[in-house]
Length: 140
Picture 1 (cartoon, rainbow, N blue to C red):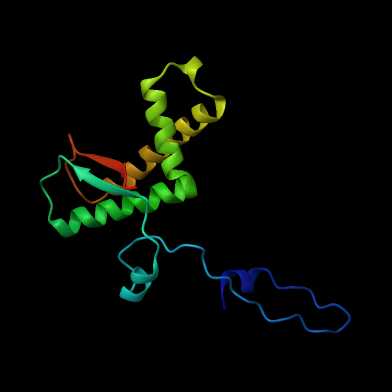
Picture 2: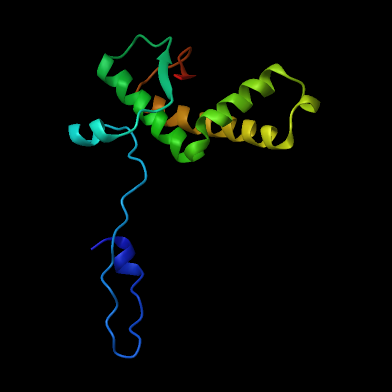
């Protein structure tokens, strides 16, 4: 029984039993260590890549795990707006405020907040990360 079934039981109307709960599969599986090989093969590729730069203290496995944690948190914060938010932030960095639309400013601020939260998640368990940073690049 899922949490939805447990906490959101449909009401019985006129003695008729409700139809059984049908779980809707997620629209997209996020990258992470818990995915099986078949799930990874069916997952659509992300239109961006995450790289941990200037950090040489960990193994490739630890770096990969940190990158996946960063990406998961970034997607959790921004949903499908990762690339638009990245582009809005880059435009805001290179332009003055009066050259940007209000929507771009809002999106750039969302990027900054999401990046900070994702950075904290990504650096968890890595130890000393003085000069290390996560780089997000569009792949297409």
